[in-house]
Length: 194
Ligand code: GDP
Image (cartoon, rainbow, N blue to C red):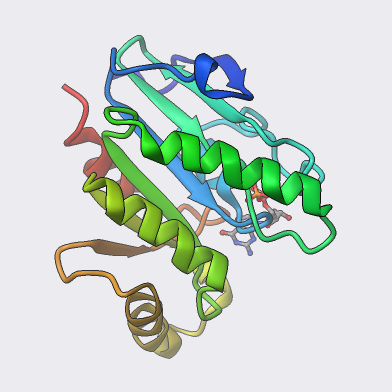
């Protein structure tokens, strides 16, 4: 697969715009500012493809990118930004419930958390949504460049424990900034793309 051949397809604001089951679909999720756009950009070897640093909470859309005509990368709207209005939070909740309620929308979930912190209540909710679909899931612990080496193992353990991850779900220490973990994540993703 030529990862450099990536194009933006569409922003879906409601279920009628979701793309149903035609190609393997890799779904990325994470709270605002965790570095979700940076992780996607890192995988695609791009700088500003998935937007980085966009105002948090402004875009309640499910964004679809087509990768070399072979797979979709799906960017779910970030969550957990404190300054978002109640109406916007509800809109996010409805869109996510719609997304996770439908079969066949996720080939692999990529749940991005901050490697430095205990996952938030919203992270736990998101992990439960992924796990409730029964789809394969991988957890990416981003910003690990900010950790001391000795902090990596205990932080990964805290994340697994807080999200109540079954033992077969992999957690990858990652740095979108430095590229750490990028190869491991791409190898995992490629298993789901023929
Ligand atoms: P998003 O809101 O989740 O899409 O997050 P962005 O990709 O816009 O990143 C949010 C901020 O975190 C930006 O200032 C990025 O430069 C920074 N960031 C993203 N990934 C990393 C990383 O791996 N390490 C560090 N140190 N900063 C990162």
